[in-house]
Image (cartoon, rainbow, N blue to C red):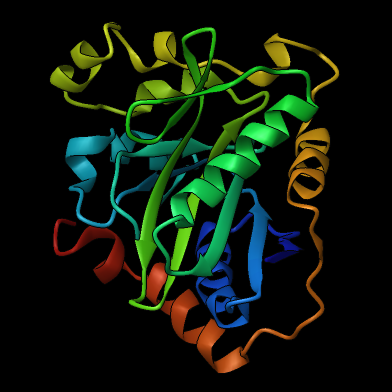
Length: 234
């Protein structure tokens, strides 16, 4: 299977989520899609989460932050320009998640980091998490997407309010104590070097294709709507 990559140049979470969903149409039995993107100052919650249970939403928005809801499940995450998001879209198969693991572990190795898979969806280095992921599908194709902390403002993660039981399972007192930036291991690691590492790890070539405009507008409208984000909670 060959990889094609697409890199978003914008940082609007609603547009980036819409692009991800539109890229499903370019994956087939012979082609997987690697999508790299960044959101600025955004909290993204899982599909079925309650906004106000997962973060201090009103405080975050008062400081210029944005709230978005993704299509996959899992926990709330903070995105800024020190974080790189990735999506790997393939035809649904038993080894779909393994394809994601192979690429991200190979990417880390290319940066000189011996990373390990931990638990359900975490990638760690020396026991500390720098990447988490979640999965969703449309019945035929599956998207494994997640984050890579490169030089993110970890202090902003205090806006997240995960249940204490979840932190206890991981043996930590706070979100901040559980995670790390890759730049701590090597100051030469940047968002751009991580992008390059992903592309090299996947052996990916550029995706030269035009996204369906009607589909994009529909998804951008959905992801940016209060009805989708708040589910009647606002």
